[in-house]
Image (cartoon, rainbow, N blue to C red):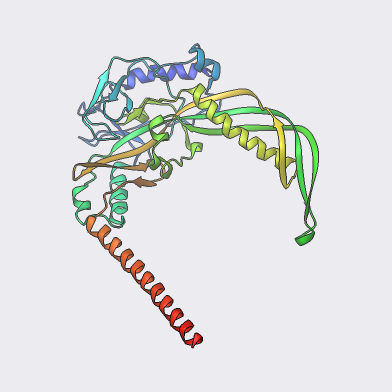
Length: 372
């Protein structure tokens, strides 16, 4: 891994920050998104922390991730697994989590698994505080159509959990030799035609910030698309103080696997870039195989507020982007409203059918008069 000195300093900080206590009352300090400082929720004491911008050179190589030779791992941490939804979370030594932040079940159990807890290279700190998340939730849920009238009172947002979700962010240099058919449109209207040319060349693309979600669970969750927009330009250097009071999901898609997904995306961008470079209107058969060099993988954590609530023994989930405030979730639907919708649809369909029958009768009557 590059910039090993910085990472080693962080690992030492991780050990000392694990049990950071309030100097006034001795309670455990937590990161406060509203102030950007460590704060005590009991006595109100606040301690400033230095949030450093993530240096551009801090990243893992693919060789580091494959061989574990140059990778750095968290030492004072524990893994908690959810037996219901399969979520896996990295907790600091002082964290106690009774319920899974994703599904709300109480089947979250600590395990002895300490392998593969890679140290992040960067963190996107929470910008949305818990109080702001509660307001966003209440505003969002009040606007949900066809929901039960008592939903807002039964779905009180008092137990939002802040979760840092894992991301891979890739940078790379590419060099691609290509050959193929490129079409150009000439003329216009009825005289328009395409003329094809065989061409070859070289296309270079420097990839910056290709992001891949590192959670299999979130990658398969349709809710995630609504809150997955993060601005990685605000990435901060990894500091365990930024995670104080929050839960971090352990990545379930490792770096090499995420790189394969990233390469598929990059390949599509390269194909489009070749078309633009040749200024072609159409692309026919084209052969190219990108070459990659200086591939750098950043393992980053991005903030999400998670809220699960029960309504009539069903669990519903809401996600809030901890940086932008975007909300995505599911809510129960009122049977009364659904029946009303079905009734309206039935009336409309019945009216449409009755109108068609009436038109058929009128046409038949006109045909009868014409035959007479």
